[in-house]
Every structure is written in structure tokens, then in C-alpha cells.
Image 1 (cartoon, helix red, strand yellow):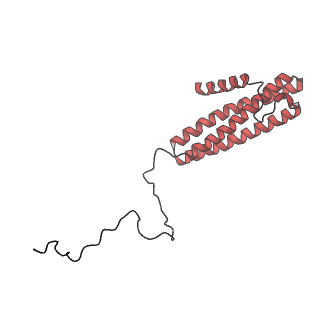
Image 2 (spheres, helix red, strand yellow):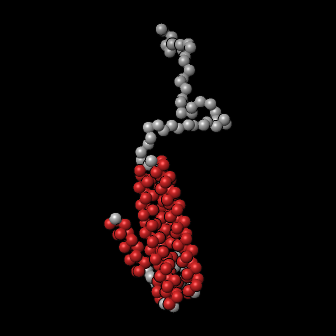
Image 3 (tube, helix red, strand yellow):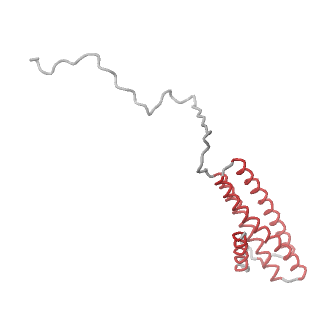
Length: 178
């Protein structure tokens, strides 16, 4: 619980520190009209909800494989996404209120928070996919591997050198006195 609160606090602090920064798309938030900010913010929150669903599926996949390493990795990403989504939903509502009150600075700030959170959520989604793709450090004792040998390969094992052919006859003596 403390870890989750710390993550949320760090995200909020980072968004406040970069409130006047340009959006990840490279567009300054002050140059975007207010109705477009509201629309883009709502779309961003929707995409973050989609990312949350994707990561929840990855979590279920990790549970089904009973791989603790993958499960912990995905769960960590999921917790961060939930915190960012919660902040983004609140910022989206505050953005709509600021636009209605014609508070431009507040609207820009809330829009920037949603935009930054969206890029972080996309990054966390990719990291969660990497969690599922990574090799586990534990193997199952029932693990079996099947190898299919293509037909076009020559028969035999190229790493096994055949023994030398045996000598059938003895060579002539080296000295005529024997």
C-alpha cells in the first residue's frame, strides 16, 4: 500500500513539475484549442483503459502458466497503470471543468497530465508484454522438448567423427636385417 501511494505521489509530482512542457507529440498544449483538448483527453483515457485490459489479460496469462517471475513483473506494471489511470480520469474531469470555467492555464495543466500519463501507460504496456516474453528462471520437471529434423539435412551427427579405419596388414620392416 505504501509502495502504491509512493508511485502515485511520484507520478503526480512529475506531472506538476512538467506542467508547461510540450506534449509527447511535440505540440505545445497552449496551441491546442480547448474543445480539442477535451476530445484528445477523453481518447487518451479510453486508450489507457484499453491498455489496462490488455495488461489484465497478461496477468491472467502469467497466472495460468504459474510463473511467479512473470506474475510479479506484470503485476508491478499493472499497479502503476492503475495509478496513472486514476490520476488521468481525475485530470480529465478537472480539464472539462476548467474548460467550462474558461480557465486556460488549468486546462493546459490537466491536459498535459493526461498526455504524460498516456505515454507512460503505453510504455508500461510494452514492458508488461516483455514480462510475458521473458524466460522464467524456474523450469517444470515435466518439461519435454520435441525436435523435428528437416529432410534436407544429411543423415548422421556432424559432430561425431568416425573412427579411423583399422589397418589390415602390417607394413614391411624398416630394416632389412630383421
